[in-house]
Length: 533
Image 1: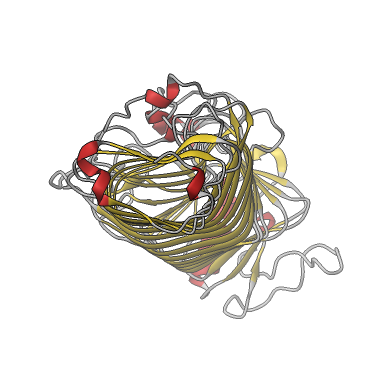
Image 2: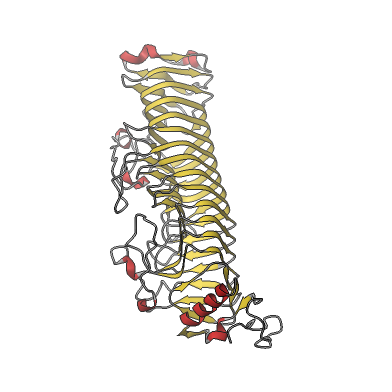
């Protein structure tokens, strides 16, 4: 009964009076033969409803009162797919119901991921809404294979490529066979109030925003078996003008992540007011906040603020590397750039003893990084031997906090950065910790203000500098007796000043190589008269 208004949802009296299809705004797949019985494959009926809605100028296709099994459906311009409360769109378990579809845009994974439950390309004014459920059936055969298997055998729930004016609101997504939802090179995307439960196995990201412009994500709950909320740039377009707010996030890998794929770069990103945790405790989050730029392009103007973190391996990981993944048909990218990063108002507890890191490359430092109002409680347990670990460059490695293993500090390891600022930092540990709180190597322009850390009397030093130039340390107060406040080495170390710190619990203010001793200025500091040197 094409051209009908569908079922009378208000009265429950079955089919409503037939109306002119041009004026029709609600389209019901039951009218086109859908069964909604959890067994019949309703792909064709749902698709005909979408096509008819699109041909009539647009409207809403409504799934209600049933469980609709489906293979790939194509969403078209001016069509809203609405899944009502109590209804489910359920992915077919027959791979033949998912034809290979490759987006036209040139991007990193052109031939790798080609199957989806819901797909749209170059469509405008499309949406998925409702308080019902879309279930990818990823927990059942044949979709339970791991990453080493053929990715073509694991459909996404949703992929939109080069679409404009996209809305996804209130829906619950469950159990994708791979990444749950991938927005590729889309413009003007709003994702609001959705629930994602996607902890089936590995490789099940919650949300992937890829090379998109003007994206707003708010009020979402994401529980993922891989990365949680991920921004990527697999095409030669920047992922830019993105805001994320008021989300509850759990995952097993990186929960808030920019990267790993970064060919197009990242610009103008704001993520705020979120919680990060390992959920039910079955898994531990690998990286709560991971900013990764390793495939060329520009990373610029990114702010992460007001994040509360619990039970993670690493709280903050920032990496400029040179993995240089190449988009098919294009030249290998050069080293990218990373600059203007603000991380503010972070509280983290139950953080492992790996240590946080911010690392650029010798030939390409990260520029303009500010960390402020941060409180982290680490599990501790680092040894004196750990404090002597030499951290390899690993410029071409896959970026992750696990790439370095345990660091020679329990707090922050910072290397190859120009203009690094710490303000109002409070860190501590649960178990005896013999590593310093902070290590800075090859830093040009460094400000440390109100950096207050727990320290063991057996630790080598409170701060460790190597080849640090133009540094100011002020307002710091070690919590506990320690041997040396600042240990400095490297011929590149110069113009380092200490003012207005409370050094009353330190046995020695500065320990430095003879070559650079006169390049360190120790000004007015509390307790200085008691110190040796």
